[in-house]
Each structure stands twice: as structure tokens, then as C-alpha cells.
Length: 279
Image: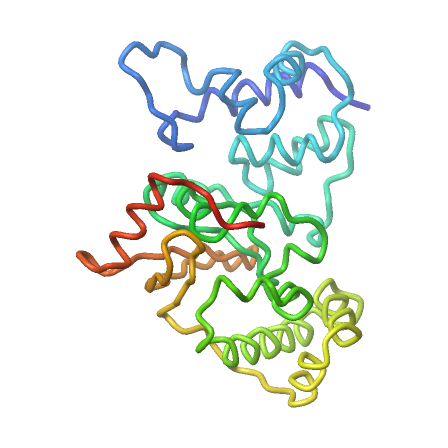
């Protein structure tokens, strides 16, 4: 049973505990609201202000698990807080396998401060969960992808057009990297895991993947320097810094170009022209 009073109180307290700067929003000189406004919390949770406000007023429909997951992410809830939210709304908290897309508040706080830098939060399977504004401009809007297509490693072999974003001289290494990385994840997660499902699908689809899989290569690691081929501004060389959340196996990837370089100028240009890379 949904506990509407407790749910409403929990949402209000969590919203009021967040400051605009915690989620990458400007505070404004005349701001008097304690914490976030309802419309801000609703926007961060990808829902209408009316829907969110009704929950805080102990009214409205019984929220689905999908809506609760969106609220948990929008309000930067911890895993324990997310589980509590589910219970208040009358749902059984998702098991760990169902938590793969819940980004921890620590990583989100860092990403929120990187609006002028290409950055993304990814799962161990290369699924982009969140992007900075400039990250979308550089690599495309990941929110448009569905199913297995969300995994970069899967797209690399199943949709060769996705390779166009990367310099051709890196293609052979990236093929080995994605196959070897998936091998390691399947070893950790076991048969029946999402990683195993991806590997099975790719073995059916791609002769190249099958050949690399049979090599049983492991231990490859991404190179610090990455070379993108953007359709609007051309070649961009960036250095990739990685921050890992060991509890969730999520990684925050931050891409920076050498100051004064041609690539730095191209990133500045991308910040003006916005997204142009297809999903």
C-alpha cells in the first residue's frame, strides 16, 4: 500500500535539501525558496510540474516504478533513499540488477559542474546514462538510444556506422578493446547476465566479433588519448580522465583538450553550435 503522507513528506524534505548549485542550476539573486522549487524538481525528474506537485500534496495516481526511478535520479537520492522511496510508494525495491541505471549522487554532483566540458557517466557495458551539455554535442544524445543499442560495444559490431565518430586508425584497437572488455565482464557476471546476453547476440551478428571472442583476449585498457571525428568540426583529440564509482561500476568520463590547441578551439565551437552527432 502506498503511504501518501510519508511519501509526500519524504519528497518535500529531499527537494528542500537540494540547492540549485547541487544540480547545476543558477541560484539567482532574488531566490527565496528553501532548496529546489517544485518545477525544478519536476524538470530534473523528467515529468510535469503538476504530476510532481500532486505527489507532494498526497494526491495523484499511484506512481510506477519507472516514475519513481526518475524521481530518485532527479532528486539525487542515494541507493538507500531510493529503496525507501520505492517502499513508501508501495513497490518492492529493485534488486541490484535493477539498480544499474541509478547514478550515485556523488557522480551526479561532479557531472552537474561540467557543463562547459564534454563528460558522460557510463555503465560497465558502455551504456551512457548521463551526459553534460557539451558531451551531447561531441558524441550525440544517448537518451535517444534503446535496448542493446545503448551499449557502445554492441553498436561497434552490430551497427558499423557508429564507428564513424572515431578515427579510423583506432578502429582495430577499439574492436579488440570492446571484445576483451566484454569477455571480462561476462567472466565477472556469469551466464544469464546482461553482458552474456550481449555477447551471445554479437556472436550471432558479427563475424569480426566471433573471431575476436575466440581469441579470449583480456586485460586491454582504454587509451588516455581519444580521437573523435565530428561531422561538423572534424578531428578532435582529447585526453580522457576517468572517475569510477566502485559501488555501482559506473564511470564518469571527462574529455579535455590541451589548452590553446586546435581541438580546444573546436570544443569551444561545439559549445556554440550544439549537438550535431546522430544517436
